Length: 450
Ligand code: NDP
Image (cartoon, rainbow, N blue to C red; front, side, top):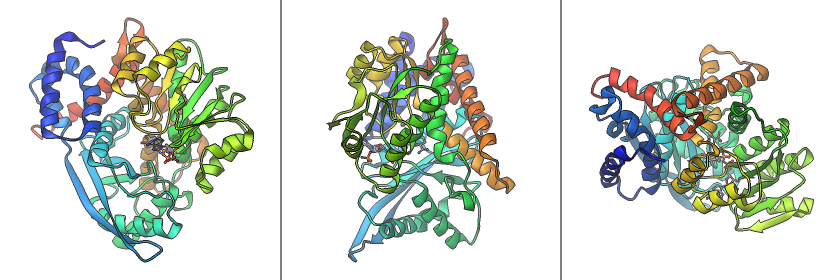
């Protein structure tokens, strides 16, 4: 699938990148995926060719690493590591979520910040790319412990962020509760009420639709891919992984559009409910995960369907798959199984859920494959709209925001078609990478040697 003449350049480029960033496999993977499609484009365009643009775009502007100390309910002193990767602010203030999960490393946050730069560029809004978080595990912690951790984290981070500098939001392990604790602490420390974080509560500067935006946007994008082929999600059997924020609203929007979702998962396994996760069952799932913070197996116990411990759902036959849990949860053999079972579309709700083998298999098989930087950009897009509303000191209603979200997802789809069309078939990986690249690269070139 790759242009042979540029392969040697990609290989050379990746050797240099790995030498400069040792022990960072997720970051290498994210860059390699982009380099394969962007390198031929760079080599074909004089203005990018000798500008060292890929070298510059893969080096973050700066990274802040700090100690986060807090006291647990037993009075023990605990220490975690906090990070903020300010990747690229060529087209706007740094923007990207905070992740609290034990698997957080610098490599994971650099991959996420790099991806975010391209994704934010695709949204058409003026936002640069950043990402941050900590190796803190909120699971099993009391509300007070989470609050103390968030306050301590923000006591370090506040001096590096601001509405025109860097605007963090949520991600895995960081939802409305955590954003609120952090925003409260930011406000105490600075004495200012400004839109320095997004994903806030509605009564204090948050935006309607933000909670739903990533999942809804993922489904709008996937439906656009179907529509481009004269089809739709209506009547399709869909497989979803994850059961957190992105998975829940992916399921909800598929239901609205007439599809049937037969699976959901968490880190312990997946449930298979052939009759569909809808209505009261979806409300049960939301309550289980958002309020009770329970395990997905409890859904199977309640509704008498199967739970497969330690498994992912990719062997369940479907027409469309939506990986919405985490990075590297769908491999080459899973992609083969999905295609063999009749899967014709993939909408990546999570960031980089498919590894490079899986992506290659989907692209080679001409599956409509919506890569994360395009398909899940709806979340950050509505975060961008939250920034706009904060600056204007007003709030738009749900309908207005939903229309704006749908238009943004249509525009992202259109950009992918513009740059990814290959004789009538759209290669969305190529389209998203090049469209995201062009805007950022052009801004960097305009600034001179930066
Ligand atoms: P949540 O914390 O709400 O949910 C995460 C889900 O993924 C849970 O079901 C969790 O299971 C599962 N999960 C997490 N880590 C693993 C793992 N290592 N193995 C298996 N399952 C795992 O996060 P979100 O829904 O917000 O985020 C999901 C993905 O979407 C991430 O890749 C995130 O970067 C991406 N994303 C999120 C956006 C947003 O607006 N929230 C925006 C754009 C992308 P368990 O409960 O067992 O931990």
